[in-house]
Length: 126
Image 1 (cartoon, rainbow, N blue to C red):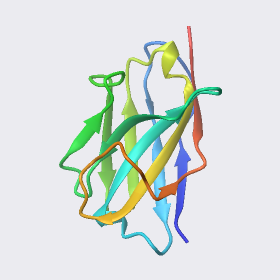
Image 2 (image 1 turned 90 degrees about the vertical axis):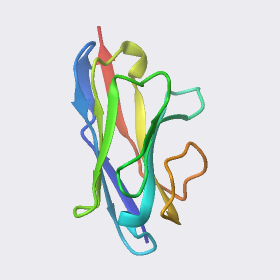
Image 3 (image 1 turned 180 degrees about the vertical axis):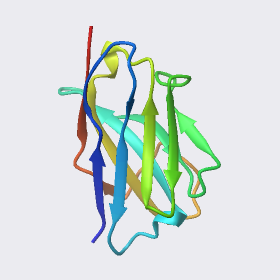
């Protein structure tokens, strides 16, 4: 059973920074071969793509709304993914979800993912 556990969320002022983490564990997923994605959701709205990273960490993709402000990296030795969020805006307030694609050697993408975490709340205040 695959588990994805997000952490690092919290309350931050607009313009501030926050680094989230996602820890992957369990059988059924070879983390070092899997593309990982981050999504976010606000109550009443659909979940939206934020960022993704390929299995090696060498290729990334970002939504237009976060490009230039967010980064994403991974540590395959630790089975961890790290979205780094800078210059946070009020509209970044959401629950952020980590997702894993069990397809091996995949590119970063905005499509379907196989495993999801429970989410971590990020709140940006003025």
